[in-house]
Length: 253
Image (tube, rainbow, N blue to C red; front, side, top):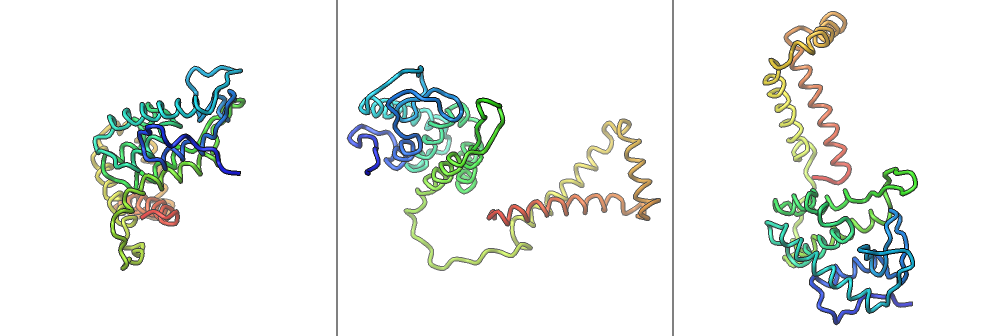
């Protein structure tokens, strides 16, 4: 059975791939229903002024979707200090259709897009994969949201596929040379600066705890006094490096 899709003859404001993403993710319902988050919905995910018992035709649902997408596309473009390409706009509008314009406005996705960090923006779509259980209020990841965010992130990057594809691809860098190890070193160094710069602030409030920690390090563990600060810095650096290694295992640069 062929999938039901919106009317392609309507004046869509974004690439049709984005329209199809919204339509297939939301699916067409001609009678009002409550979504998994408890919101009354109809048509292609329409939630404005929907009441129990409402019905619509497919033609009405298509028109509402076309109008909603046009409004959201204009709003998204107004938020973008870095003008989006066609597929970028389609992905951003699809996200906005699901999470709302106000949330998009303060999102990491938009912030990274406006900074020109397209790979980071694409990854950040995945942050929006949770919803609250309407009965318990518990925040939970939903498989459908996770899958949709992956597709939107891929659609967002599709604009780059018009570039010639490199045929000589470099191997992934060793961990020692990767940005992960570099950033861990920088972060540890920043920790030293922070410790030194804040040492004179509110020291009285934490002095007993600091003295206790010093006694443990010096008298119990036998750490020489002059090694205490370097030991703290090294420990912090190891913790940060462990976190960065986990990021690398998750496929980050």
